[in-house]
Image 1 (cartoon, helix red, strand yellow):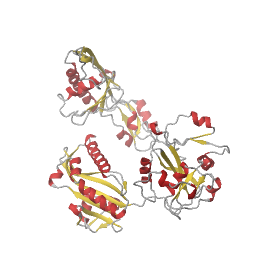
Image 2 (cartoon, one colour):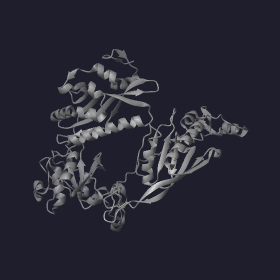
Image 3 (cartoon, helix red, strand yellow):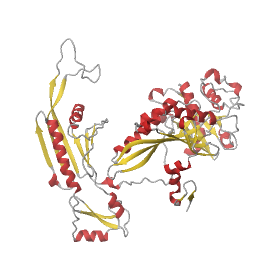
Image 4 (tube, helix red, strand yellow):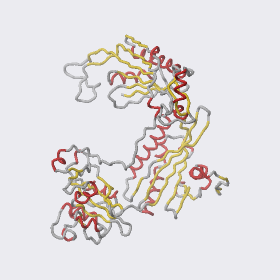
Length: 565
């Protein structure tokens, strides 16, 4: 069993990795090496080329919201990143925010952490956009964790950890001779440059093609005269290429690579071209990186000739769409195809798509279909001045208001039709009555759904259970772990199943309510009235084609109301 010296305790080998990442271990091994403004070095390796820093929350910062806490340590984060970039030039960084959460069910507390993906930073990075992206990501993860019925409630901020690793990006450099099989195809132009600007010479060669000695630098104008290369470092990386495309908006790039110096792969990089930028000049480049020489960019003058042997056995010329990378046998087929702008990537041989969420195969036990009727009430407008105060846009005039006058809804039970029920009401207070009636009926549904009816089996069901060879849920072979699966509402036997499949085959914990019409004003009016009936309700509005109302059934009460438009 491994022994952790700093913690003076033995750790199970299966939990060793988790122990090293735990907050308790990091606090124990903390080197107490403080940088400026209380930034603490938690871990470091390879002479600080890999390091983890911690910024702890003060008493005032601990009770603040996520964005308020991040804004309070904003300057510390910037100084730390700037110092790391000054030392390493290029780094990979990710952030992990730790917070204290409370479980109301048993009054327990626990530290939870939420992290971001790795981000590559260069000396020319934009801190403002990076900081906003990190804050929004962490804030979203905090809110989603609390809103998904986890039972945990946020109490306070603990600390922020910043992992910074030195990064050596893939760069293009000076002239490198091409592999023989590519050279024989005569599909590429390998410019013999003596500097680290092979990428820029390739772009210049594509914009100003030369028929005489295209491999010579002297055959082309100087790239500084035809291209905007501000804020670009050399040798050029993929992040520099993004900056290059912003500086030169009429150019788009697609970069391919070589696998084992035999197969053209990619694209390693492809420009994001919107519908209004399809007039851009697309340039195909090949990145040579065999490990024995520095990486080198080569201009692809004929993509069809370069990769034809890889995609087809036909000897005739093929035509590539430079946007979606599909190929065609004739120019007419290429011109007539509807390009989606999405690169088609086929799965590897032997790849299988499997369905795993077998619990989603079952029908929802209850569903409600609802509808509102409304009266059109003319707006009070004068002839001289048109009322646009309630209009969605300045160019829209509101002529009538929809006043809800009546409603009706039908409860449908998939398991037992005896629970089906229709209810309607007419009156000026129909919205309030609708909410009250829906809440009472869903409370009754909650009791029905949570009533565990014993299984009802006859001789045929017993015989079916003994003779069953496959699980009726996942359709895999049954062994000694077979159990009887039944409907908990009616007690009806459904079939033989694996024990794990039966446990996961839980009934849905919500009642969907569908409206047959889509009226924005009904959605808004319901949201205004719902808060008076359910103090703990939450409302979400999202663009959909139909109105969808969702009432979650929690274990103790129905507390979450979600209305999707």
